Amino acid sequence: MKGERLFRILGLVDEELIEEAVPGGTVSGGAVRHIPWRRYAAIAACLAVVCAVGWQFTDRLGNIVDGAGSSGSGINHSPASGEGQSGAVTDNEPLSVEGTTFMSYAGPVFPLTTAEPDTGLKAERTLTWDFAMGAYADGSPRQWGAAVTDGYVLTNPTDSDITVTALYPFAGSFSDLETELPAAAVDGAAVEAELLAGAYAGGFQGVWQSDGKGGYVLDGTTLNLAHPDDWTDFKALLESGDYLTRALGKAPVLDIPVTVYEFSDFQAPHEKYSAATQAVEFTIDQEKTTVLTYGFNGGSWDWETGWRQFSYFVPDGMRAEPEYKCLVVLGEDIGDYTLAGYEDGGCDNEIDGVSCTVARRETTLDEVLDTLCQYYLTERANYQYGMEDAEGTVPYGLFRRAVSELMVQYGVLSGENVTDRYADGRLDDMVGETMSHTRVMYLAFPVTVPAGGPVDITFNMRKEPSYDFGCSGSENVGLQGYDLVTRLGSTLTFTAQTAALVNTENVELVRQNLGFDLENGVTEVPLDMDVEHYYLEIRPKDA
Image 1 (tube, rainbow, N blue to C red):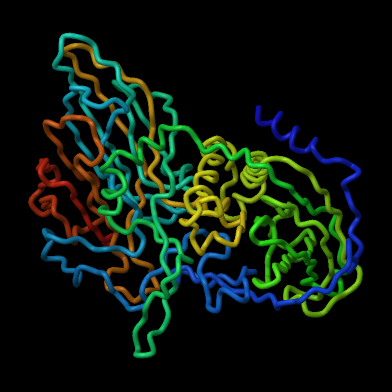
Image 2: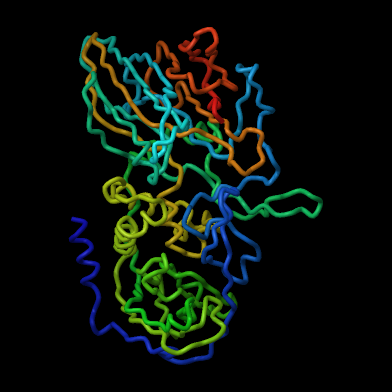
């Protein structure tokens, strides 16, 4: 079916609509105002400085913004060292009321639930963190993360069998599925579960700027991603049940008519101009036309006249950027346009020898997103996230749906909810960041619990820790955080829950509210069902 859809999309191209671009030529003349294109860089929590082509509309964004590049991890934290932490790390006080608010939060382990409300099923739960030493690819030892076994015994107190759809929630992203997808088993036999995915679980925030007094303030925009940073964010997300209802519901249908301009057959004098750039310019009625882009590196516009310029580095077979480039027009078509070549992304000095082929076709936004998502999984996910088999790891339907949801939730189709981050219509950002957005996903499979009889359900997964970035100056660098929630979002009636630790010889406990005591051999503790959230913070002994 996917192949047939793609064939239909490609088949819509009319050969008569393919126009050979003449360098610097005008499809239908006219004077053009040029607003200089500028680049900006993403600063990802001081883990690395990424120098990349950015995207800035020069009359709107007068400062550095986060997330123009490929990572999609646009969390923005205060530059103040250790801000938001719970206090100094102490080895002699393992039991504390408050845990650490980490810079990177991995999310809690959630309890099993069902698609059906009021099932009447009873459950006992045992969650075990296994801190056996792992290893890097080169064989050197590594103490990072934990293997988690989350086990349940379901009992049916009625005199009739009860069949339910078990739903096991876990926090993560599509880009981490290869290593963090839980494996489910019922009575010891592996089950093949369907994977469901909720929408982006975070929000947005502004850019940190100096307040002129030695401090920092947010600028009030919604340019940066703000992923969940503690368990209460997930509580707010899940406790009403609406998030799960939407995940179980139907995907948005975006059969909106669009006109697509696809760019191909690129030529440029790269031997002389290593950053040779091509720009397309046109004027629109801003009340009647919205333009989305994919594969473009820069953009400028004039709000008063409706003039637009979008540019890209001409592919040279070496630069790691999308070979597929298109403009997607919603509403009234752009009409006449001008193509020109430039020495670089500044689009100041025109040059000869830059050309391409432009194909115009009419289709729907749904079909455009089909093309882009398939292209992204096969051609871009490995470059951005090191996913060698993104097609085989990430179910296409889930990824495609999540992109549509993002457009409706926060993009140009969201009306007054559109965020600054996505308001400029860069489909590169929306598609690429969909891969790394934190979300709650669910393993779904049917389970029959016989009358009076128990069923054992077990989930095994690799759980990354919450942590502070190594170059942040935080006193909690080297600390690894893990947590669980006892009943959030679950339809089950729990009669008991237990937490346990195994293979702890290489770690020391730093903070917790569980009650483990390694020195005295206490590695298994009962949980109080009135306590919603438990946490555990450890440090590797060799850290």
